[in-house]
Image 1 (cartoon, rainbow, N blue to C red):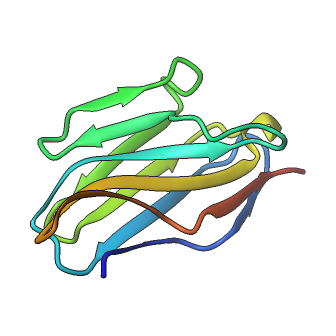
Image 2: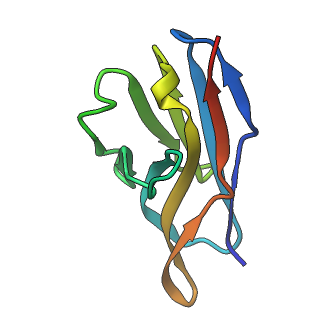
Length: 119
């Protein structure tokens, strides 16, 4: 059984920084892509950052220059460094990964991390 487990909830002041992590476990042959999907209050999840197995990254315009995603392939772990946070960044952040298992490729989600940016 493959699982994605995210780091815990966080409260940060405006202008502050925060790092999220998302660790995959189970029988994993490879992870072609991983990404971060914040869900803002009253809205659907949206992709803001992604990374491939060869470390190619893509960012939504809304987070370029502020968020950086990276991965440790040996640990099957995804990271999101969030800088210069604003109250509008408050959301539940979900990680997602397409994982190659013995049964083929499957998509998995983390449990979500509540990020609150407030003074």
